[in-house]
View (tube, rainbow, N blue to C red):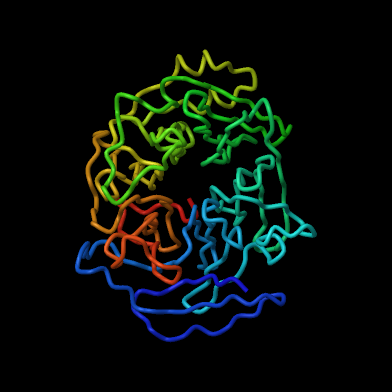
Amino acid sequence: MDQELVTHQSSRVAWRWLLNTGLRLACAIQICAYAGIGDNPSIEVVYNLTLAPSVITSVPDGSWVVGLDQAEKPRFRAVRVRNATEVLPFPDEATSLAAKAAPILMDAVEALQTDEDGIIWILDNGRRSEMPAKLIAWDDEEEKLRSQHVLVAPATVPGSFLTDFVVDPDSSLVVISDPANGANAALVILDRATGVGRRMLEGHVTVVPDKSRPLKLPKEVTPPRKLDGSSSWPHSGVRALALDRKREWLYYAPVQSHAVFRLPMKLLRKPDITSQALAAAIETYASKPPCSSMVIDEKNNIHIGDIEGRAVGVIEASNRTYRVLASDARLLWPDGLSFGQDGKLYFFSRLVAGTGSPKPGPDAIQHSLFRTKPLAEGRPGE
């Protein structure tokens, strides 16, 4: 049986075997050493994980739902971390294992969000097994499927890699980011009332990677190499999305870009809106470093994962100016920003610097869930 390992920062007691519908998850707790680097007291390690997360969301009962990175082809698609002694497949064993008899055919969890009613929204982009992408609404309290919407052409294209979304509480719309192959990046607007998805702003300068703004990443982070020997970061077009507290503006940003842009939600809610009309309404909101994740707190400050700066930064609503909030040498690629039930800001690093080996073995700790204090509290689950 494959092991799903989660470790806690300050413990060295063995975890008990867990039994859930006949499935055992082997877990262990151990101390993680960081070789004396990155000791920023404002950034706490909550958990260390041997499997890479793709996304996290906080659930009202205090647990965390964690999507697992499809690139590593983990046995489970997602898990629920209840506390330091309980890790379970999410939403159930069959679905997390992508069993044929599962009530939901879940393939690659790329984005998660918990709304004010406790519904967990799941964006499955289908790229692990090359199946259609889908948006799933899971009623966590009732433990049942609320809805499922499949996204196909023309909303998606060959090479689509749906990465993030916002659910509009004032309409039936969901806005999804698709960095695709770069030049054909776009926003996808899904109307849950009709099930129809529209591809908007495809190839627009504000959603494609900005070639004049090359990524300057830490030396420990290397992009994948192509067959011709060249290397580049895939999916560096539009990725991070956020909705302001009054639901008036959609904020979005490519990974490789110099700015956060925004669009009026009132236009996106128009069923006959065109890409040309949307393009005319785009505003450049603020400058930013490269990032793949951002969230907005209750005072409309935008927090982002600063990839180049090994930091979490903030664009303050009062002056629209970016500044570093907390930096740490361990943060090679801060991602997955999400507010917890305590109002604090949680995020993970794709890899942790200083674990003692540039090529960690199968039992080495590679990924961490961090916590820091945001400029203002945010809504849990976002």
